[in-house]
Amino acid sequence: MPGLLDAEALVPMRRPVPGADPFGLADGWGLGLSRYRAGDGSWRAGHDGTSDGTSCHLRVDPATGTAAALTTNANTGMALWEELTAELAADGLDLAGYSYSGAGRERGEVPAPPECEGTYENGDTTYTIDLAADGEARLKVGGEPFARLTFHDDLSFTMRELAANRLAYLGRFLRAPETGRLEQIQVTGRRAQRV
Image (tube, rainbow, N blue to C red; front, side, top):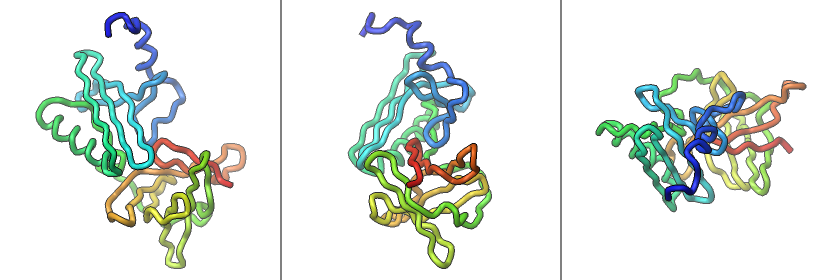
């Protein structure tokens, strides 16, 4: 809608915010919008979100005004978006797809660090990491088994859903700067504090 928002007001929403760590959901953050790098190095603005089995995605190319959006009511929405953006890029429309599962990123695999075991909370969402005697790590969400974790040498992990046995998302553990202790878990964009 013309006149709704001055074009100059949109610039800081797309400009990268120094110090904002874009892990798991985007290639950068502006003030209110995510930043995604296209194959040619140009940038797209947008926002992705998931909640309780829904998934929504938005991309805008500020240079051309091209926009695309997808909203799903299934837990496969993120995978569908990845497939859609890959197909459109192959046809010449690069929406700057982002791999939430870390596909195409080389990472060393390491055993699960014992210190990651525990419970982490964000509001009413509870994540529990259990380590089996054989070293396999499992993630429970709300007390329900959800995924097997494969750890990487940078404290990140990939999750393979137990129900569908498919790669789901990236995650990572974060250390407290003052103590070096693992204090938080981040599953895509959501962080949770150790309790």
